[in-house]
Length: 421
Image (tube, rainbow, N blue to C red; front, side):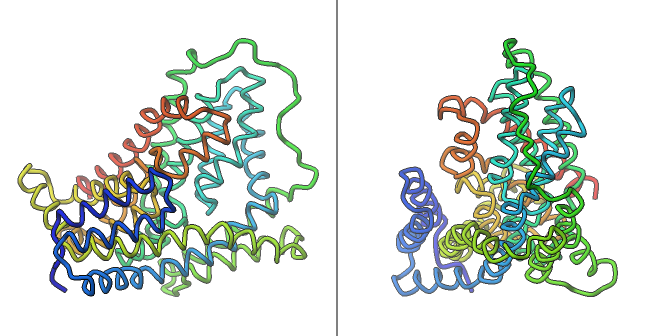
């Protein structure tokens, strides 16, 4: 279908959606309202606009199905205590001397195995606060370690933004997950380095040396091996396709891994409640993506992507930069990595793959979505502030630091897939 919506109309729709989200209007409705207004102001008739919105929403239904089924693994990891066990074990192994590395690595691992980024931060936050109380670290420093680990984990996870990007570029999910391993590790190193750089400014010398408050209540937690088995099964199932040519869709792999994990932990009697929690966690994302799809439909059938490409040419920039720029812009605009990935991949994938490979484009765009998804109009900003008992003013001061880690990950991914390969 030829573009029938102007770039101006598409941008107005996006801006309206962002403003409504900032004003605390339900994000899904904000997206739908922005899409409708953008389509009408962009030159479409009411009928054409509604058809584009419906087409956009229909286009992301496969993504929504996979995200809903991913709730099986997420619910089991969170509710069984597996996520807490994994985090506790990492912190215990690394000890207090490497507490910041342990905190960042714990969040990275939890996010990488399929726990939502904000949930991973909330899971590790009590452990981080307890360590911080003993060592004397401030909440600012601890949250920087948590957010750096979260961003590094996001680019190698089977979370919604990865699924959406894989769908948009028609990629194997496992290939996309492993494509940004090096940027993720660099992001982890950058997190620890940045934490150490500002450590002296964020130490409370009155920290307690007491063993109390280590947040390691392990009495009811499963063993570390049982906790890890589910995610390991998921990775194996997703790796079967590239290794042996047998395709196991994430829609199957993620729930199977979760069920194997719950059996290994001996908690099958709780499976029903775990599934309920997992679905509850995924439903807001699924509903949000329906609204996102309507806006994506308007942007996809507008001149927006052509305008972006022409701008790169005018600025004499390489065309491959469209991939990371699109990821950064859309995720930053919506305050959500999953929403940004959905809009950016569905809108720009065809243009991006005309000059580079789908994997290169998908990897760079995916990396781009984690750079600015932590802005104040997004959910993770407020969720993480609450988890660390920080005011909005305090939380805002952290934005340049955590975003710099995100941009380091984007730059490394861009160098690998845009310059080297």
